[in-house]
Length: 134
Image (cartoon, rainbow, N blue to C red):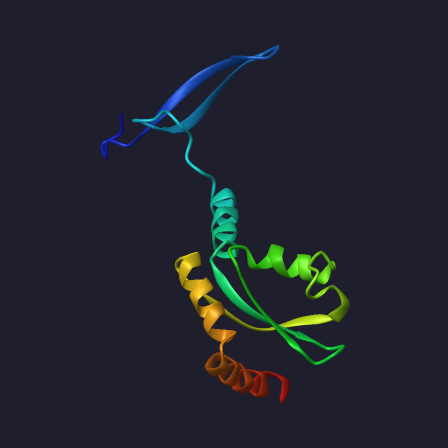
């Protein structure tokens, strides 16, 4: 065990035609290898993709909007663009003009419900003017 009490170096002798010695860094309590920096970066990227999100799509075909919520924004946008959603299938091409991330899907659904109300549509009108008018 190392001085900090968590990591230790284990030497393994592996025979594959010739002898060689490899050192493997493992957690002292669990015996598992640490997650590589690359895998940690991929996990962080995956975490950011699965944040509950409310999004606003704009149809360049009929100039209408679509409001939705999801827990994986990249997957959901891909579904819209591939025509897998009945409500937006005939309104392509679509572009994402606005999104908000939340801590829980319940909060995201509440915000989506608000955007579909009269007051929320007024707020969306201001958002659209800011994004489409540019």
